[in-house]
Amino acid sequence: MSRSIQSLVRRYQDQQLNDEEVRKLDDLLRTDPDAREIFRQETNLIATIEEIACEQGLDPPVDTATAPPVDQIHGSLSGPFTRWMMATGWLVAVISASLLIATFASPSASTQTETIATIIGVNGPLQWTGNGGQVRSDLTVGMQLPGGTIDGVAPESWFALEFDDGSVVVTSGNSMLAFSDLGQKVLLLKAGKLSADVTPQPDGFPMLIHTRSAILEIVGTSFDIDTDLAATALKVTEGKVRVKRRSDGQLVDVPAQHQVIAAADQDLNVTQIPQVAHHWKSQLQDGPRRTYGRWLPATSDSGPMLHCIPYLTETNQTIYTSSFAVTVADAAPVMTNAQTMIEVEGHLDRATDLYVGMTLKTAKGDFAGRFQVVLPSEEFQSDERFKRTLRIENFTLDPSLSAMKDNLASTSHELIVDSIWFHTLYQQAGLAVTSVELQEQSE
Amino acid sequence: MEKDQQYDRFMSLFMSSERAIRSYVRSLLLSNQDVDDLMQNIGLVCWHKFDQFDMAGSAQDFTRWCCVISRFEVLQFRRSRARDRLVLSNEVIELLATHAEQHLEQSEAERRALKICLKKLAEPDRRLLLSTHTIGDSISRIASESNQKVRQLYSKVNIIRNQIGDCVRANLSLGEPSS
Image 1: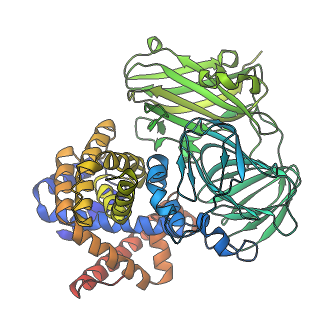
Image 2: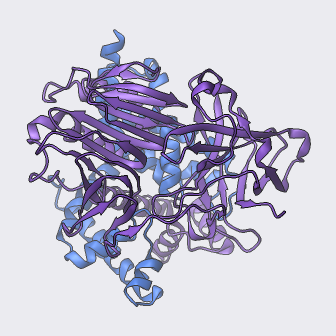
Image 3: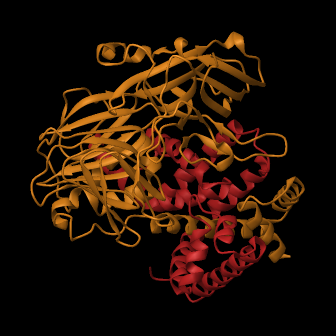
């Protein structure tokens, strides 16, 4: 009997039960205390294995051949920091900014207190945690920072930092970047997108960018990185970047206008950057990669969906949001033009104003703004599957960026689409996107 | 208590309890991704309510206190996902939560034993078991990449899980394992 309960529990956790089996398990757990004990043991086992699997996916120790002495970077890349990166990504998003003070301020952690960089652009919810324990979420242009970690909390988060030598790094969306400069710039990109324009670095001290799957050595160049759990995609605009794949130590040099993907399960091939594309379509059937939100697979009566998830804004209001990365480092950049239109399909549990937007950047990688369309609640009905086609000319600059508008694009044409996002405000409206497609309208 | 001291105290307690809380929440939710989503709120709510916690309480008291808070967060979270199918009823989740709260120390001991047992596994088995619980990986994918049948591989994973379970029970019957 216990083995059959155990089997049911495991298959439940592996999401392999059908409706009838779930009901059977539900009955068993309701009526049988022994079944509840088996359930506890099994889920505890699975939770622990997941935790260890997460730890195993972490970066190995920093390459001592190319990295500065361990004690120099201790404050930013070891001990409590690493533990935080691996196990408490969720904590970072909301409360760690406050809570981690104690961790970073521990007596054993060497800290960097001198400022090394200046914020030159900031938008959307972000939190910065200094190595010395200082925490800020009220980041503004012109603020000088010592080393630390910047965490983009939402798809529309965007952050540009200029080091004292003029090198600029930009993160966008849900990215997490730790940075330090103790004679050598060392960055750790845990996840997300980073663009950089790096001035020539001192001989023997290239900028090092660590990701889960690669170590990048930059002497002076412009490039984009897109990293996730399994792979790092690099696109070099100018100059040259040396990439070391972590899984086997293989090295390649990536010249200007070329790209590479560093992943354990594919060849480390350097290829030319493709030309721009004017068409892009979401691929939710392939899984949640490069999306933000809660992905659900297809069922017998509906296709895969990306549900909005909540986050708190700087003003403590809850927004429900989801997004799709559009231009990614291993494919042609997706560019808008005057004929661009966006077709969106999804479902709303209840009628509400629906915000559809694009985060755009220039061909050089500079932030060009967020442009959006607001579809009023009157256009929807509760429990409605909807399909809308939006023309590019109807997208206008997000009002929250109005103070920066002189530095941003005046229209949404001829720009690279970084991401497409959706949100509803304040109350959960059950927004789920099933498909989004960017294409040119026929003449 | 000064705010800084409160931070220190909360930080210390939360970091030491975090794995237990997470495991507790995981036992009530179907996916690790859901846990990630919810742990944001739980951390925040625990922090906001921290002045209601008895400062003389032990770390175990704190874990239990956080788990009670987490239970309500889980139920609220599930209500927001009421459209999802293939999940257990709220009544059962309440029963499981109560049961888990009564066995927090036992769960912690099992976790410690399990880590020791995992180290004893043959490397290929260990890798297979961990791979099936790595984000972005799945038994189907591993089966496809290794030209094996899903059912066959799934059986193998279950045999390894049984070995681990036996090892944990053996460890616990010999006394508290050292980590």
